[in-house]
Image (cartoon, rainbow, N blue to C red; front, side, top):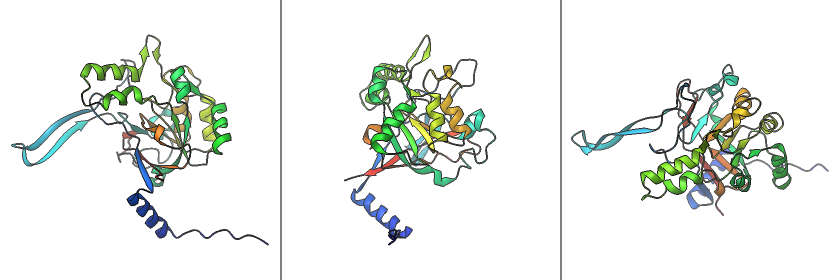
Length: 286
């Protein structure tokens, strides 16, 4: 006798249940976003290339003669400043794809499940650690196959190089500068931060059909990603396949390996290559 599949709940009931769980703590919301301040370290490219603006903020009024009843600021920054989203148009491999900018990406892509691969131990031992296929398959052996349409987040705890100091209200400018230096981790040979190798990016795109890749460092690629083939393979393969990137994430240690849902809509910038954004994760609150 054929077994009947359980009937799916109507969407209205699911949404009502979601609202209730958010209200009573059954679903917890985890903020994966670094606070955007002028001190936050930005991407640094060779001086002959175009540069990403750092975050700048200027008070417009604060209940004073400039505006007696309101407080507000003007700010400026690059599209790829702070915790930010990379759209396919950001990279040459994705420049000709349809719906490749932040204002044209299908909005349903901004809400998706996440798989978190813990590489914190390896990254602590080696800042140039590269996530490989063997690491993904070992993770899948414990947690199951990565579902299509998922974010894959590489947890390294790299964000702590910055966030531990930045969260201290008494931190001095010298301490913030030292934290930024540790977060960027440059020496005479370039930047040293963890990321994926070229083979695993192709595997995630072609064999697992992921939605995108996220990291805690400044870029989705390793700091030494220029020396891989092709250079910066996460950018090249992800964006060439119409997939996305998240970087400068934090608090990935608060997420389970599976079961979290990310909410991460970028600003709707016309033909935008990316955008700072607030990345939220919905997790089981029980």
